[in-house]
Image (cartoon, rainbow, N blue to C red):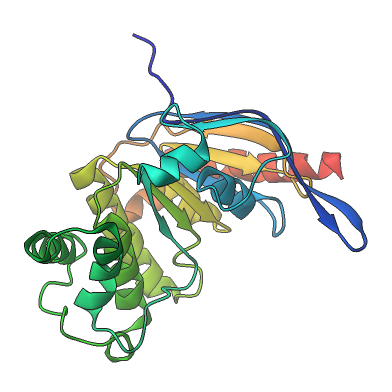
Length: 260
């Protein structure tokens, strides 16, 4: 049976109008993402990875082609609360506790106090922050703050989680730990995840599908279906299978420069 894409773009273009003239950010991007997939976007800075995610989230409006999310326009999907979004910075309000930061979208959406409480407790457990709800952001490490940000995006139980390089500012040890935790979270929830990264090992370790993009204007140079098992200890990164996929990602990144 053919799977209906959760996210589908066809010949997607986006050109920004600037004081110095038009800037093409995305060009002819066609992609399908199925339910439950973990899809990483990788490419050089400025290649349109984040721009594509922002189009999915209705934060940017394409200038050509088509884009659907759950069969709807991105704007309709936003109103239907189809996705949660995790930004590069945790973006937690310092005057609100962790629990109250997570509760904020639920307050805006009009959930009852009892429902808010239940959902906050559940997502704190999911991201291994149970017992930290009463702390303030400045009392937590950077990695814990990012987990709180993920919890906030999960709080209203959207089927899609969009993550814009959430671990890029963290040190390698913390990043490895959060990569492991994210895979466990994905396995438990079955969410469809779109994940932006600059790290080849991170993209290969996390993903069921890796989308390799060229320098601006962002085009897709390769879409790599991972052959790695769903259970992935960190030392899988030393296996021939892992290194083979990483090599293909590098080849795709090099091929992208042919568009320059």
